[in-house]
Length: 144
Image (cartoon, rainbow, N blue to C red):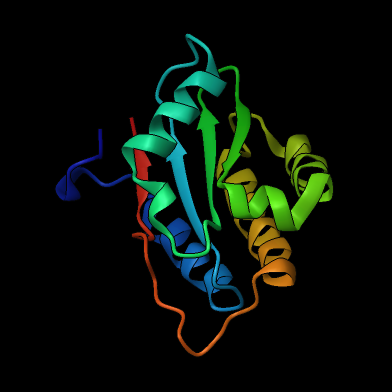
């Protein structure tokens, strides 16, 4: 469920700009989902959101969902099949290593911005920007 525009979280504009900046270097697509509850299975919730947000509709199958669950804070990353094929394990390892130290309540915005920058940098290596690229997915933050 997406936050109504009039009740946008204070950090959402900054996060959306970070997504746009990261995507300037890659044909890959990045989405951010911030869960309001820490209950349940974050991996299953991330998989459901990946499907609900129609992230498999990119031509190169190069979309990544950065799913942040609220207390206890945790990052779950879901990538489409193109990301798995071209980026390899290094993508996931680098994202975890650079983001994990910030996964606390006071540093969550910093963790989100870092994860976006790392994902963009890593996607750019495997999926550089090209002339026919278009923005296939919205750059907005989804909160639920």
